[in-house]
Length: 217
Image 1 (cartoon, rainbow, N blue to C red):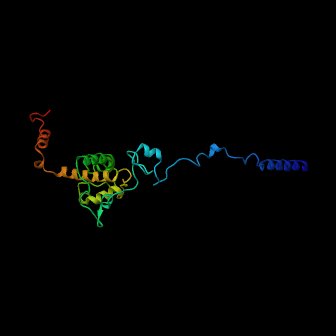
Image 2: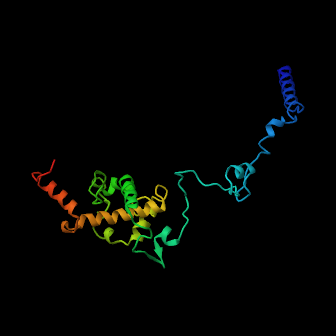
Image 3: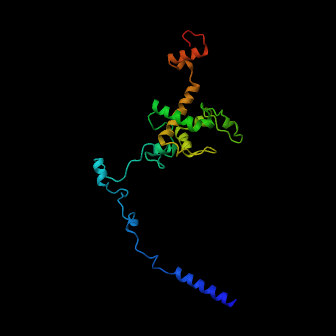
């Protein structure tokens, strides 16, 4: 028994002495492994590398433009544009030129992100809404949603409201205003009298109402 204990202690000491040997572990690092410690790089706001300046004359800063389609997590621009507020109150008018291109962008984004709950027409009549018994998505053609100022609608899109999540990541500032503009167009179209429409649209509506109208396919 004593001999076995002595042998075990001797074996443990031998293992410890081997483990403590350092001549095989402390070695000079391979110089190739240090290549990442000293590498060419550009620091923010520093001067652009010579190669970049040669390829893009006039580009003197190391800061580069983001690639096409990149989504920023911050908003830059006038306060009224990025918050929908001016003087502590929501603005009534969209602070962007409202043209056909902006409305088309708003339609595409609305149908992608909003229509599932609010409906393609904005009336809140969707399968999703019918299953939200506790709090249904509102009909955007009725108060209070329809009477909110443009800036408040923009704020809701960017920051969310109730069960509606914020869409500041999915939509840019311009796209958020485009959705507001498209909602205004939807409301105008829903309540516009037929007599106020251009002649060609009145004729098209008449043809749809009466398929027997001459010239109707």
